[in-house]
Length: 68
Image 1 (cartoon, helix red, strand yellow):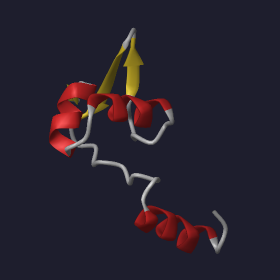
Image 2: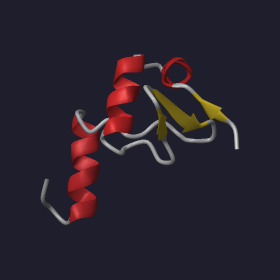
Image 3: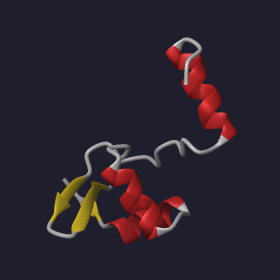
Image 4: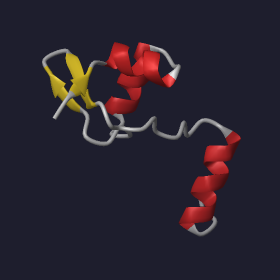
């Protein structure tokens, strides 16, 4: 399996490397593994939904049955 770093994922997803690290720390990036101080992310992993947006909160509300 091929992996990319948080910096490479940040460039691919159009967000900062620090945001990618935070998503990994919160278990929002499927398949991410920590190796020392570095996060390894499978290259096929799509960008997770940013839970800070109105659209994400609405999607969560719809899937959770009305609770946030």
